[in-house]
Image 1 (cartoon, one colour):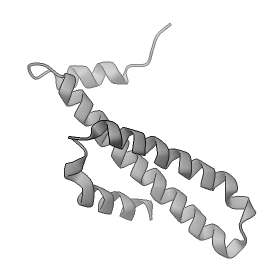
Image 2 (image 1 turned 90 degrees about the vertical axis):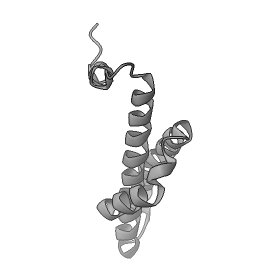
Image 3 (image 1 turned 90 degrees about the horizontal axis):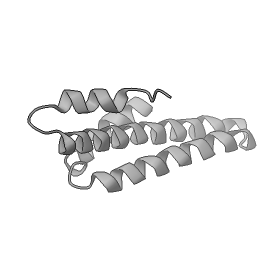
Image 4 (image 1 turned 45 degrees about the vertical axis):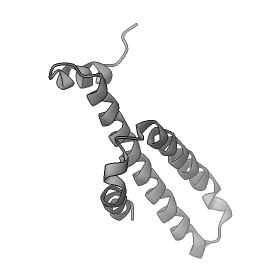
Amino acid sequence: MGRIATILFAHRLGSAFEPECKKWRLAADVFNDLAMVLDCLCPMFSKPWRFGVFCASSMLRALCGVAAGSAKASLSAHFAQKGNLGDVNAVSCTPYIV
């Protein structure tokens, strides 16, 4: 279900991510939070409903991944200068060394 949601979400809203990347980054956080809440509440549901809850959680995580990844790519492209997009992405992926 997560893979299908990823493909459909990216196909349907692929062009809307770049102009409103902050909105979609917030939406990604909300999707992830809702998925965690569903995972925590899953034991409260009876067995027939658990599969649906897990599918919904998987779909929300997939939506989070698409929205967060596209927002990050859009912001990285915005801060890149003179073709140094690879450098911007490499620095943002480097762990902090204390």
